[in-house]
Amino acid sequence: DHARRQQGVIRGGDEARQHAVLREHRRDALRGRVGARVHAQRAALCAADTPSLLAGLEALLAGREAAGLRLGAAADPLPRLAFLFASLESAQRMDGARLYESSPSFRAAIDDCMPGVGRCLGITRAAELWRSALATAQAARVVAFCTAYALAQRWRAYGLTPDVLAGEGGGEQVAACLAGSVPLTEMLAWLGSGGRGVVPTAGPSSIPLLAP
Image 1: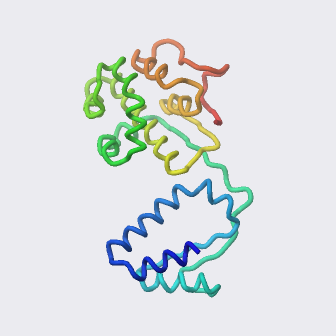
Image 2: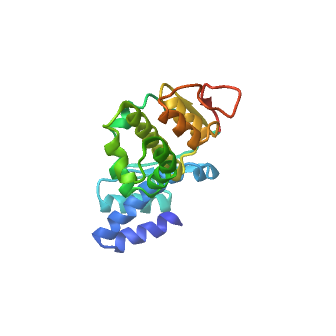
Image 3: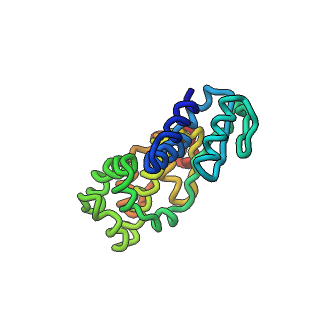
């Protein structure tokens, strides 16, 4: 039914509407990882243009073979998903300010970080966050942590729910917060102190190799 509805939209819509439908499919593909477990059958269609896309959808609806169309069944069980956070150097190079403007889920996660950031860096506005990373090594660590944490929350907003969270180096702190072992405010306070003392933890282990 879904394929039939989308076939009609693509056939009858203007070019802008066609591109909007294709963008929606890409977004749904990310969001649908969890929901897709309900459906055993799978169909994948690769098309270079609108006519070949329509031909592939028609073949799918009619139960015929077509170029670029592949049918199959989902693996049972599906592979488990892990979020692995390595050192935070890559997060320091990300354009977090642009993501803050364009991604609601990323923005919400950064806003959750800002009270703790304000206490440890004296910054109250998210717009100042990535500029502050150039000031000191301490600020760079805090900003990199916030960026990686918010990026993971963006993945979760797309429906990508990890079975396992693991971290290495600075990524351990991100994994610990996402797993619920360390509250976000406590971790930001520890990072703001320059990492002095023992990493705060709610569990018996201070090594964040964690499953939610």
